[in-house]
Length: 433
Image 1 (cartoon, rainbow, N blue to C red):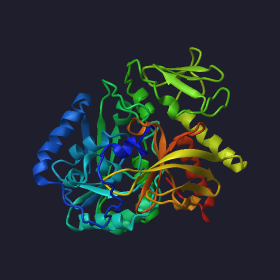
Image 2 (image 1 turned 90 degrees about the vertical axis):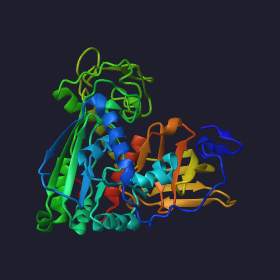
Image 3 (image 1 turned 60 degrees about the vertical axis):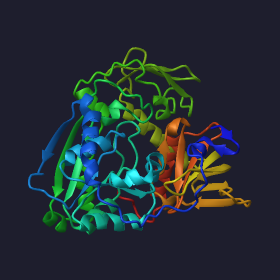
Image 4 (image 1 turned 90 degrees about the horizontal axis):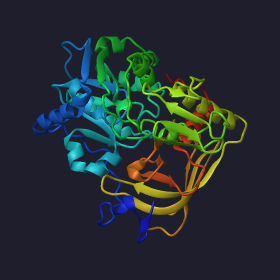
């Protein structure tokens, strides 16, 4: 990431006076602007038209707001599919602050977004969701809190069930298909010919919710929101024959399955390969990996991904896991601007995260410590706004985007380590579903 006059490219995107005031998390979210709704629905229809979106509604007849919706989170396309599934009702959507900064706070609030930060305990968000429901609205939450890395779901904590029970309104879930395959996070270039499907179902009525405990609510939600897009692609014989279909996959599959080397993978066209040992894998048009002309143990991409997770677990258990790297730091305190904090030092081990840096306008170095139990996961990006891989660390009033300035950084590996350290550090077993 190049600096110009000491400022990063993210900072100078909106060249104006720096605003350090934290985002107002307690501001009451407005309803979706009534006059914008025809435009929103038209935009959603046009955006999903190429995929010939099919929506199936189950147990939704007669259901009227207020209710809460939990959805799978594949890609940006989710935000176009969900409004069509909820038509003709308006809704409020939980959204990270980067969208507010990129598109503008006014428009984001007008389309019904509630601002928050990822993987923090935000009491203000809980209260704002209640306000939405109290005024007979619909609140939409994507509990995975990030796009799918390889088209599979992530665990949902039992706190989701506790939250649903607390609000005492019907619980609805929407499971989408095709969104990830059309534009995976590791290469956002759109694949043509991928069909889109969604099923929206009322999982719990108000009465059923009252008679079900939080753990059972979470378990049922998790079962319904489970997905594997590569299995869905194979089962439905969906051919994706674009000549760039494997480009970028090495960001998710960073460890060579042949020589067991981290960060040695690269990709081009329809192939992913190891730059150390020369192992090469071809992605066929049905999303399967082929080695030496044959299927192999990781032909199903999520199997390779989960094997990497196991490798990180073993590394941590043996006391060998350590990340110690120089990073470029971009702070996002509000919906107005990124603020460059220059470079700093990021360290991650069994004690959690340690980030040493100088806050904007300060001369003394500070250390931000985040022990393992402070967050159950970490937000990851594979090419954030064209600036490469990064992770984010958040407090209630700031989010720090951390871009590596040295080799040895992969956001997926850091994610695996963060999630495992969280589970290991808990005094009692963490129940995720």
